[in-house]
Image (cartoon, rainbow, N blue to C red; front, side):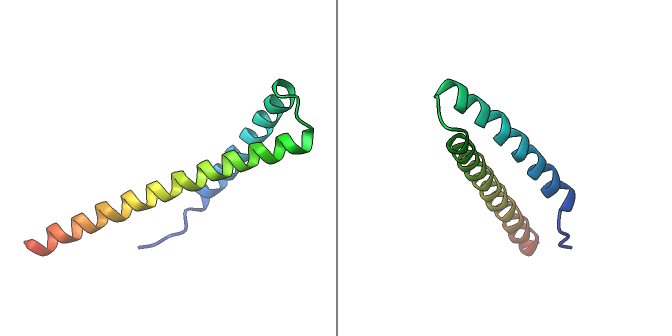
Length: 75
């Protein structure tokens, strides 16, 4: 049964907004970047890491589902 995980996506989005804001502040203060550049860099870092994390999760989920279907078909 495939159900869209709306609460998970909502929490992920909220965490990304907070992380981008915090990291942009640090990038702006520590690296002396312009506010716009610091937000862009923080967004790129956080969104790319979130995408990689979801891809790894989905690949592992697919692999375990595939393994379970192979084991069940052997019985």
